[in-house]
Length: 113
Length: 110
Image (cartoon, rainbow over the protein chains, first blue to last red):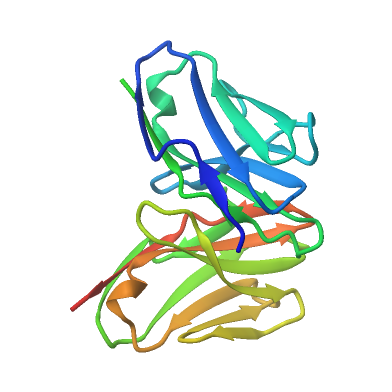
């Protein structure tokens, strides 16, 4: 059973704080993704990674950075959180050998005040 | 303009009734089309997957159809249950480039 876990379900941070969102998958998947989900907009891709130490910008990378030091872990970093980054953040992983089906974590609801 | 448009945005039906959710897309070509179910506060879970050449795929009470000519997909839910209350997301995949619809929020009332 594929498991994707995220470090927090709910998080409240202040404007200007540095925020780390952690994601871990246990299926040795090559690919990992970070999305944000906002009402009426659906999922939007922030960053993704095809391999360790490798990262690619998605559709909305501004204000975010990522880190993939180990294959199973993909971190999303908000260097200086802003109120417009209040959102649901979803991590996903996929394998090149399984039709690229993405398995999602439970999400982190981040509120920036 | 979003390449994947879903309708309706939200839907309320009575338990036991059937419903159909629509997905119109402009993405072309694509490898496969998936429907995901996302329960409130949870991550999306895959329901069905269809390749470009498939017309229909079933998973229990869920049946997805694909019309490549009109670039439309639908998800039909039969004999709805309260546990079907969720958001349903249409996703097109072209070699790991995923395009997501905004989802349809379904509420099943007792």
